[in-house]
Image (cartoon, rainbow, N blue to C red; front, top):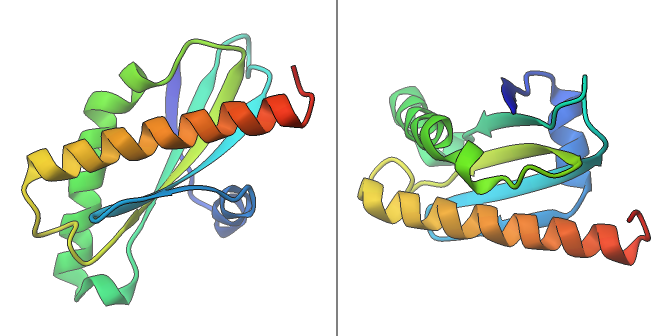
Amino acid sequence: MALTRLKKRREFLQVAASKIVAKSQTVIVQCLPIKGKVDGAAEVRVGFTASRRVGNAVCRNKAKRRLRAWVDQNLKKKIPDAAMSYDFVFIALPSTGNSAFTKLSFDLEQSVEKCLQQALTSFKINNFF
């Protein structure tokens, strides 16, 4: 399963339009399920964002670094090998940079699982299966 980055604003807006969101104390996770595989394999694309309310540039960069570290280590394990590809957007909150990494990891795991459940539910409701 490939893991690539979302870079264009249009891609971030498409994920936000899906309305599949999970919020926690340290992070907001948005998800867009995409039916079908790219080149025969499921693809997972991720994007990271931190607004000015997170803090100055140093704080925003630290928050995004922490999110990237978790995603690079753990996201592939959480995604089932199914016929769907996913786009994820991870939005940093002011507490992302200052919380303990164990707390951040727990929140990220819970949020990703919640998004995946919502994605499967929305696909079943919309008769995509």
